[in-house]
Length: 177
Image (cartoon, rainbow, N blue to C red):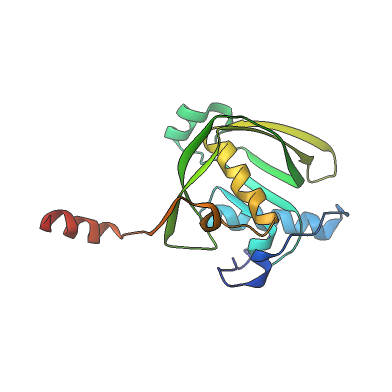
């Protein structure tokens, strides 16, 4: 396994529709292993192949595995999902706004409306069909990563985008407010 460089906004691969995965060979296995390692090291909760410069329809997703996450998400905390050729086959009508960031757009966040529950179908790392029912933050992550496979970024659909303020600047702002 190896860390891969995360491509940033402005790289053409982020704006193209990724190609369908057709082979689950050793090269593909190395890609998904590298993606998981890169996502965790970043640190992030999801990563799509275009974000490491590979135009293939594969995503990796992992909720944090800390005490607070285990309390909130139970068995989902720390579980790694690898999904090739993912499709959202069902989405709830209940739309919720949430804050999103992106490893390819560091330092920026946005308020994005998304369904609070989705069902994703695709294939696992060995080509076996899979179906995942996700809700809350996990559903949001899946939608965000699948958007990457279609050349769409959160900034394209956000209600509002803002630059992150470093913590010490926030403290200064509070002191002067």
